Length: 234
Image (tube, rainbow, N blue to C red; front, side, top):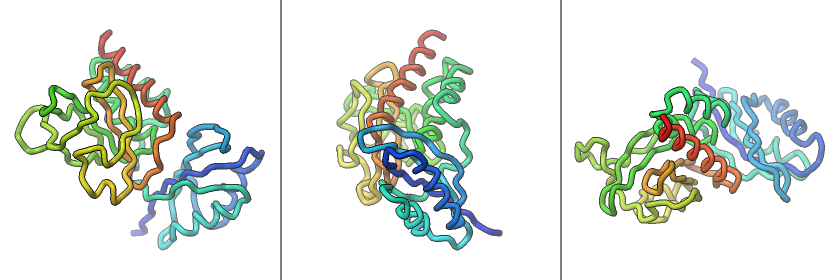
């Protein structure tokens, strides 16, 4: 059985008409099938887009890198394998609709589905009860094992998380206390946002990057706010 591998590439495109089309053409000529394009933000650097693509069996990711860089002015910010296949939602509006289907479960739904719209590999919903007691309220598919196996319900996090409680959405560094050392080795990009309260927080992870940009942090904060309001008004 042939095996196809998904990859996520973040590109910064110059502010010039037709550049994204030129990148798509270059990738297609290299035998690379683009599955989706996500606009991350527009800035003084140009357009920042995430390209999700699959390589044919035996294909090398370097071909995608070379193809994208063959277009004048294009910068590749990151390129990594993407394991979160089978997307349940396609964008922020789809996610908001899913949150509204069962308002009382909106924070948990956010944790399960947020990786889809942020091209992240995983998410967890954490509840900070006190300095020595943080509980895992919900986890997405592919989330790392953070629990301590103490049979608590919800399970208690075994790591020290000194950045909790969290007053506002922000990027979190992999060296901000308590995280596994391997997260630094794999360049784990992290972002977190309070879900209606500093003690209830969603944490997203992208091993290998790219780093969460300001526009993504703002979107995460907005969606977390929607989830919190739905849960309160159920």
